[in-house]
Image 1 (cartoon, helix red, strand yellow):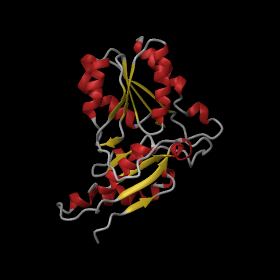
Image 2 (cartoon, rainbow, N blue to C red; image 1 turned 90 degrees about the vertical axis):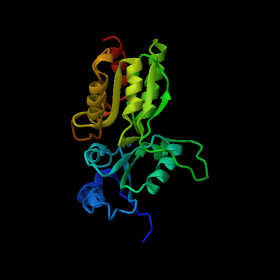
Image 3 (cartoon, one colour; image 1 turned 90 degrees about the horizontal axis):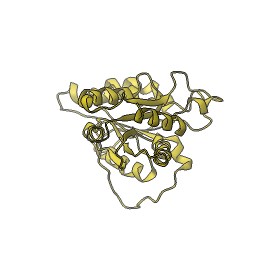
Image 4 (cartoon, rainbow, N blue to C red; image 1 turned 180 degrees about the vertical axis):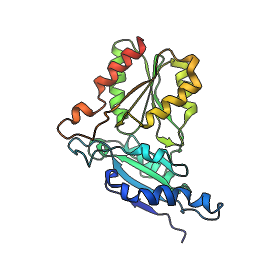
Length: 253
């Protein structure tokens, strides 16, 4: 009918009953019709990640499930200003998009957001902090934690380059590769469990592209391979101190 469909699934923990429709219908609609039909720019908004007290069913980060599916895009903003510009780009994109919104941002993020219409490019990572010793890659609310670790590392003489991936599929390999070729080291951090997390894909791709330039193994600081806990959430989360320890061990490898 010419309209843009925007679905909202509250929370991402409960997106799974729609999984078949998203990955088997929306993602394949254009391909199986030989480009005769498409989803008309379907955007699915869904809050994801830890919230401080959510427990098993209100804290999960299921982005990696969708990153395995050709035909959809996966976007995760780090801040209110980024969220508006990326969301408008998603809505106007002809492909189906899953737009994960970090729950932490709803209550804790404060930022000046322009009232006018603006769009931020998809599949374009952003270097939000320049550095020379190690590259850090993340997305969503994890960026603020990683930035704190970068500041603490700087006090110990370690210069960190921090990259916000923003688009997980299709992701900006070139920006990450260029940074790692400069620093020789890579650390990836996300809230999702480490096994099968999207950090593994980034790690494998960068090793393929930058093997001879790496000075240390790629480090991953992620959630644990357990159901998301309630009372033990502080132990599960990839905290600033965990990231700082990984920065130091990677630089000193």
